[in-house]
Image (cartoon, rainbow, N blue to C red):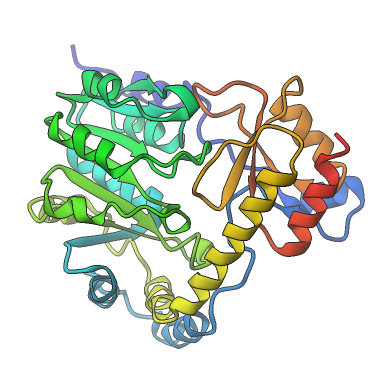
Length: 355
């Protein structure tokens, strides 16, 4: 029976939509702080590199014209750095995910998601009329390849995030390879935080025709406000993506900023070193269990406090963190804390020991 538009729209909002972090300015006004430690959204605390800023400033002068449709300059720069893999781009990782889902998923299709994880996979699939099947992670939030394969072997599309948001868990490349060898559909491997880990999944692209690796310029390059995402895809899939893509999805200023940022690897190296140092300190000095991970954040279990209670208590101390209660399949006692500027991290450490 043909579904009604009303039922499709209603299904898109069964989970309440994407849950955003609270605004720093709201916390500042509520509790009387001139500046709040913004550790809720996994942002790079530094402005974009000088090269990115200069490129964006130049590009804005020609914004009376539509941008290019193939993002050739960005793709060439990415291939220069990472190798000659086929690349597509979009308005942030979210835009890339939406386009992949649009290209592959039709009404009633099953899509498998390793959970707990980033909620947008499920939202994008549901909006397209697909059916989401969540596969719980195992001990220490690791993906269990056998369980995942059992659910995903015949699905058109499946999602794994590594390092995973919000747990930080890094999936071994050999586990990803084993999954790829034993499923028939496409695996979207979300690598938004991969630069902060010591793993490299790119060699898998040359071996498997069913792997998409999504990445972003928001984190390590500090371009969150520019919304630049990209993905390494199989050569056969690139035309499918381009047909499904929203016209002019990536604006000219954002693309220019991304190319400029990629020309300054020292900027990224400095932030990666900063994250590594503070992630170690958090693991050593936080008086609660910290999940081991490879991202620019850590996840902390504050049991018997709930994540909401801890978030509210830390907000009163001028620290904004993310409660993990909205992540499907995760308990209520967790918070996610980004690696911010030195002063933000110091304030957080001072605040959490007094909870």
